[in-house]
Image (cartoon, rainbow, N blue to C red; front, side, top):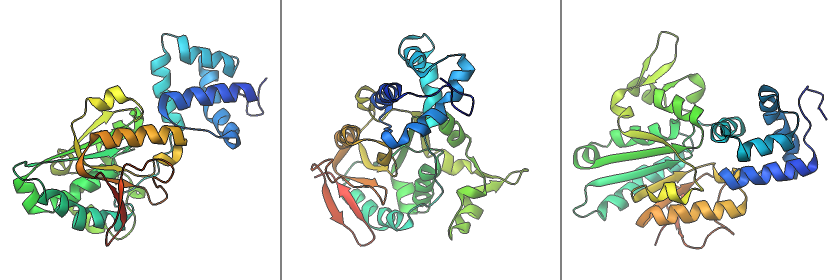
Amino acid sequence: MWNISGGPQLSNEEFINLRNFIKEKCGIFFDENSKYILEKRLSSRLVDLKIESFKEYLFFLKFDKRREEELLLIYDILTTNETYFFREEYQLKAFSDEILPEILSKKGDSKSLRIWSAGCSTGEEAYTIAMILYNKKDIMENYKINIFASDISQRCLKIAREGVYGQNSFRGEKDDYKNIFFTLTEDKKYRIKDEIKRLVSFGHLNLLDKRQIAMLPSMDIVFCRNVLIYFDNESRKIVIDNFYNKLTNGGFLLLGHAESLINVSTAFIMRHLKNDLVYQKP
C-alpha cells in the first residue's frame, strides 16, 4: 500500500520491526506517535531503491551487501542537527571558569587535556570548545590539547571537517569570536581558521558501539548535549556507561539543559557549580 505522497505506507507491524532495528543499531528511538515521521523520512529511500514495501526494505537493511552504506544514509536522514556556536553559554562558562581549573589542578606531571564532543553534529560545539581553550594562553602553552568530536552522520562530519558555516550557526552576542576566528568567504560564509581547526579531530562513531569506544583514549571531559533525548532509556544507559568507562577519575560529563541522569545512572556525582549543574565521575 502507498501513502498520499506517493511512497510506500508503513504498517503498524512494519513500524515496530523497523524502529526496533534502528534502535538496536544506533539508539535513535521512535515511539508510537512517530510512525508518520519514520514513514515520511524513509519512503524516498524505498522509491530510490525500487523497493515495494517497508518489510522488503527491512530485509534489505539486514541482508543486502549494500546494507552498511544504506545504514549510513538513513542515519543522515533520521538525525536532527540543530546546533550553533556557543550554545548554552552558562554551561560553557562553567566549563571555562570552574571545570577546567579543577581538572588541570589535578594533572600533576601529565600535560595532556582530552575532551570528547560526543554527537558533535556539524562541528559548532567542538570548535566552540577549541576557541575557548585557544583564548587561555597558559593552557595552550603548557598542555597538549586533544579535542575529539564524533558523530554517526557522515554528512555532518563532512561539514564539520570543512569548517565553513552560514549565518544561522551564529547566534547571541558572540560576534567578537566570529570576527577573530573566522574568515569571510566569497559567498559570504564563514571559514574557521586553521589554528582552531587543528585542535579538533573528527571521527565517525556510534555511541552504542562498545568496541569502537574501547579504542578511544581516556577523556577528562565529555560533552554530550542534546543527544540522549533521541534515545530510549535502555540505550541511554548503555551510552552513559560507555562515557563512565572512558572518563578519568574526577572527569566531567556535560549534558544538555533538558537532559539528566535520573533513572539512567547513579554512577556519577551531581555537582552544583556556580554557573551550572554538571556530572562528575567519582
